[in-house]
Image (tube, rainbow, N blue to C red; front, side):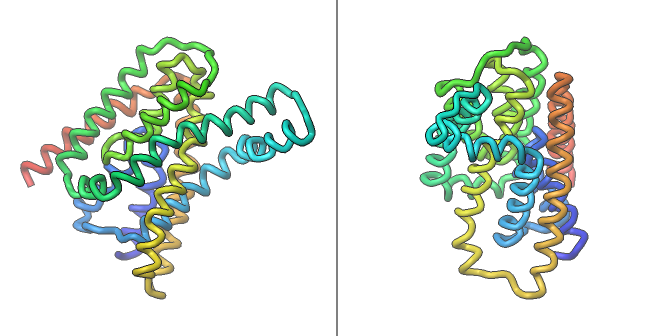
Length: 269
């Protein structure tokens, strides 16, 4: 890997991790187009750390309130509606994470084998595009998150482990289908990504310890992580704005374009 590849793959990871276009699918396609078949466990761990940091920075206020909500309610006995809502969000994130944990623990090897299939990625991108276009026809509402719908949103996140299926797109559109407010749906999707990203990183940590990066690779890993952090942060801000405007279908058209272009590249190369 050289510096240019590290920057490109880091930017791709950061943008596609949060924009509803599938980070895993884009990394598979980018690796093949760049003739760079395996970015390596170390690089994957570092860019995931970069995207994780971008979520913490973008939602530092909400995360801080979620962390201190149990203390405020259970110890200080506060009954502020906002604090109670953040306490509920703690529970909803835990519930929503359960499906991804089950899939990650019991189907890790089978899923990893899917990442070698470019054709599967292109097909899954068509599905992601369809999901995004469907969002255009969902009516706006202002219903609340509940245990039941947070679990189903979590199931949508678990399906997004497949390369080419967007995690953010699946979870946001599922939340919108339940009539949850657009901004609240997007924020919950991003915060729900925190344990998912941490879990994915932990699953790779053992492999990273077994095959640690060389001293010469450390700089490239840091560059990739920084690129992922910067692009991830701006992707979050941009997507929040587009969600407010109800423009998620734009990403659907983009996924259709990438998928069709990918099919042409694959069969004509």
